[in-house]
Length: 476
Ligand code: GLN
Image (cartoon, rainbow, N blue to C red; front, side, top):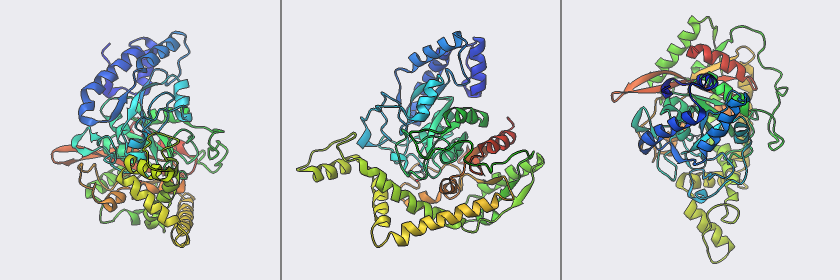
């Protein structure tokens, strides 16, 4: 049968493969054809894997033996900072351009064991630092809804791959919004799991206390299916949690109660279209019988500042390992220290260098107490605000982003305006709470319909409430 990629979901593809309507090889070929048609414009993929069809053949064997699981034979895209053994993982940086992973990340290992087909690796902001994929060393990813605009970032390639029907789902990483923001810009669903729900082993670290791997898909149910496979405690990541870690998650009650921090939504830089879509989303929850409550998050206006201190501090430490000896690029100097300087100068882009400088500064003696320690204290206060709010509500709703995708080049030379894009997303990383972005309508700009996203945040460990409300909202 002709495969209708535009309307396919993981569940539908699985059912078709069980029935024998098409095989995983057919499906994989269909995706590769679509990628070949569109990737020249979109630049979602940096590489299509030559072994994809081989993996699809193996998946078809599992179907024949009756051993196929829900993700067997499903083609997916993987962000270029998540390791797949034997494949390049460059984090879209020149310094790792030729680095081949010698082991699997736990998340990709679990997917491989589930029989998933890896189609290729996707473009991103260098080392996940950015919100537009313009910081890639390999050119920006373009938004499939309007090629003049960004796909978002840093997981722009992963979101665009799904939006352009170039994969049925993808993996991204989210340190301050990098799964949810590009998902919102591209009109797909993105989940940032609870900190510790998914192992970070084999994800190239950016800000280790903030990073999580998560799925991007066309539906909430698809993201749930992927999350259920990749989640779980992992001896290789001591911060991973078990189901028992957060006994406070919602149980029993029928409809989750939704809280709205209205005092935080009126800021200057917010596009009225984003607020309109948000109000419409809340109305639709009301119509479905959800109780809506206004909540206060007294310290939330500090969240972005906290993030832009804690994150670069961790970045500066994590980036120290790229020394021209252990991984990737090596440029010779007259001695060891000059090797180091020359390699890093040749291999690292401007935004990465900016963050190493910022992070080194906030961690330096004399400034450590004034910046890093204070940011950590405020981080704890913000988390307390959320925990307090979750005493009376089950979900907190905001727009995912202050507006739709912006034009390529619009914010690239103004880091502050780029950082403001993260205003609604960073809190989930600061608090460690799970959050999802779900498409919530479009707005017309320059004659193009651009997607917007609704963000829901839940208590630690309570992804199930995100999925329940998300599915109802999306009408799944
Ligand atoms: N846009 C944010 C930043 O630039 C988020 C990045 C991310 O989540 N990896 O830091």
